[in-house]
Length: 317
Image (tube, rainbow, N blue to C red):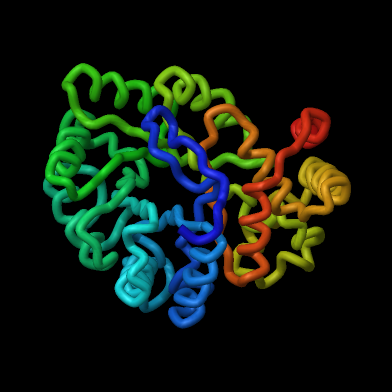
């Protein structure tokens, strides 16, 4: 399975996955199909075989309909023959147009077939609710996911963008009704976005042994250190997101990353991911790559162990 990347357990499931999850949102968006296929080959060779995507990637691009990322990954599976050496995660629930959204059982049954078709596979390793659907009772949503697990179409289920109280309610609903339970949580969490996760979600995650796979682990590229002024962010696809951290706190975090990266002969990106991996309950941070250099940073992060002093410098910043 590519190079021997460090493996970690996915929450209380006992399933082992690579320590870094490769974000598939860029495939068919900021990286074209040809380059995406090449990047997937290179990622595999580095042991980055835990891949996250979603049906809605990249519907926000004019002319796109959603499913572009899944389709490219499916082509790569067909071409490379590597499907069984990869742990593939995808998501449903965001608005795909024509009323296709949410977590009602009928829609889950349709959405999974569309994702399986695009991914050219007969099973999704981790199928996630991309966002909560408060209009649909949790019993119905989890019941529909349970059916998919029993059918063998889905191995594990996960939640994304849930609030702590709702995640607890979902876990209790599964327990009470003997249904498949959320094995993972995908929250917005990184060195500059901490409060919501640490106060609202972390206690629930710890209580139920949920594996955490944080998205925007590099804060839209901000934590790589490439955006240090408004000018750096101007006109960049992710610049708008990174730009909001260009304040005294954000710059203090970058200074701490620079200092630790220098000490460890590493990069700010690798250090930011290593800090996340050292936090309680984190299974694998999600980070995207648009070129081979990015892949090297991701692979290096999996091997980087920060000492307590370095972790404290980063946390304090």
